[in-house]
Length: 303
Image 1: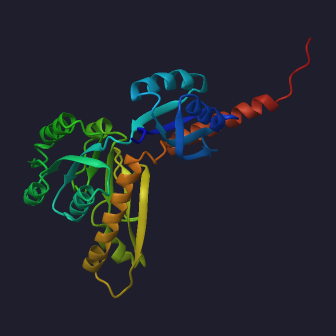
Image 2 (image 1 turned 30 degrees about the vertical axis):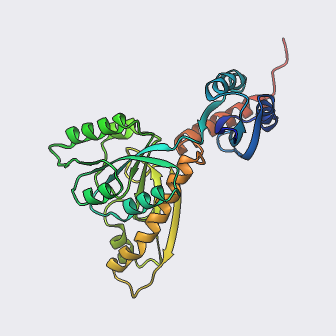
Image 3 (image 1 turned 90 degrees about the vertical axis):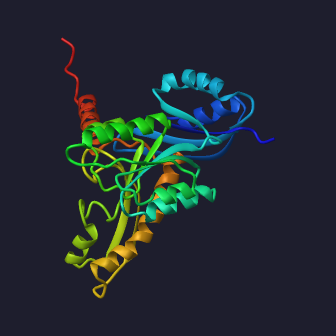
């Protein structure tokens, strides 16, 4: 019988010996490292690490207890996940179903380690598709007058299903700031352009008007700022002047599906580091520079 496998992700202020400390901790507790990756973010002074390991010596709860004690002196922010548990997921969609169909197929084919618990839509178009995969379908119309009530129902479904991930698979309603905050770090959107270019509505038409030769798709985390969330995955496809905006749209659908599926996989496998926003990075950089200047400043001689 194979030993249970886990994924440990962590971040902390950078210092000497962190890789040695983490690998030593896992060895001490019977962990066999199967995959490891780490990097230093020089802008923030933070160290990030992801380790997949097998361990039969301790159960999940015991490992968490030992990790909490180990991590405290390093000021580590860490998470431990059992790989055997697929991530509970809710999908939001409107009238474009290519990304939804692709995610459902990959899930049922065993290509995505998710558990799709529900599909929520402001249209009825895909209730039969949902039924064919035996997934509950919730039709929640959204208007300017009913937006708050609709989002409350959506969030209730997400909570009831215990969803750790919400995927906006071409869901064409802008989420309120409140819902964005509630779903922070666990909602992924697919935008049909290579961000930061062509934000907002009809990006393929914007791209065609500008005469671009590459169109793309971007999967990013949802934030209150439209199409501004941290980017997870991107890809592009070449186009030319002979193609219409409708052709751009057709070409782009395949890219959207691939990019969103990759982003979901990277998220579920905990391969996306929790990098700070640019404003926080700047604050840290300025503070560090100020600290260096103070250390370099000559001390006044003692009186």
